[in-house]
Image (cartoon, rainbow, N blue to C red):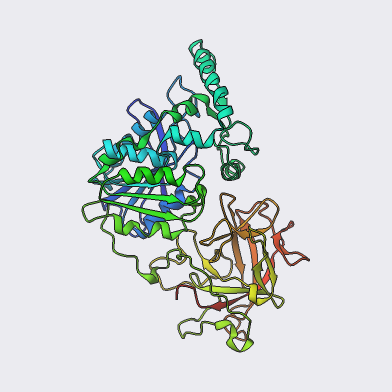
Length: 507
């Protein structure tokens, strides 16, 4: 989706940079509501915020302003202040300055601005939504709501004493003109000191460290500031501004019970959405159980007037338990979709079983459910998606995947770590699997279909050469190994498979 690079000045004259997204169907002169979006603790805008913004602007009549926090990514820091320092008072003030910038744009309705935050910024928006009355809706995902309680859950007591001593030493050193002390955001060993000492934190941030300019470093003062920050203090004062809080039921970074206690103190109008999974599963915008509540929480006098998204719009499907047809009876022809208006071999938004040499793509019993080819009873159903934010092309009936067309594959069943479904991804061991937790190297495929236009091939029976073109760990090939696992390969290898259309689980 097209986006514009933007920059704006904060109240203390720091330049923050980011992106501005608009619905592609809206005229440039149309003044739209705007959602201001910022990321969590040390994270950059590239870490899925563009995916969220694309989803929102494709499915809602709003624009999105996304930016890097000061001292991170493309944004500057104040002269004389170190980069990678996170001070809540500055970041909350910066959100208000982003609102001011949005209000100054000719293509934004200045009276219809909302704020969205996740994790640390999910706490920030609770604070800003209470004290900045320009805000018309507050969307808070997996929020950090109480620094004292949160740190007590994350940091072991035996480490806390050493940290207190380090805070004192850092203050004295900085006062003497020495560089600020720093610490890692994450460490592969959760027993070693880091700001976020959990395995899923390491998986998420390490995955982005290798493909972005994210740095595994924050100042020690950032952690001290975190402990004293309780952004839910004024949560009751958000009212009468609508609040949507989204909580992960297995969150060990910002635990659900702490967030729910804060939510209980919020006043109406408010809405709570709890999704299964951990903290970083919240960044899978494809979990439409999360995205769909927005129409209900945005009133007519709020950010946008939103009708329910029609079923045939084909936003990412809401996941459900897959109903596998087993055992396979050839007479049912895999419950093929033989509707008269289905004329093409491969269609965006349609669902398929994948076959190769008589075997069906399913998974093993590992908690990650690595993909391998085997019997039909273990096969999986995949939806072909043009984008991760929307399966079909928008505003057209033409959904054909053409020769050399690009696609993602959505797995309805997911795995132990993504129980509500996920896109096909690849890990550093070379295996493909439904992404889970934060280890998401999403697989981006290219379909080579030279013979699929041949009239001698009936629909849904021609073979497709599936090529891996991006976003996997090795990026340069795909193969079916001798043990039947689908895996990365070198030298640009590809696999020849057959997509057999079935009814989507939502039909």
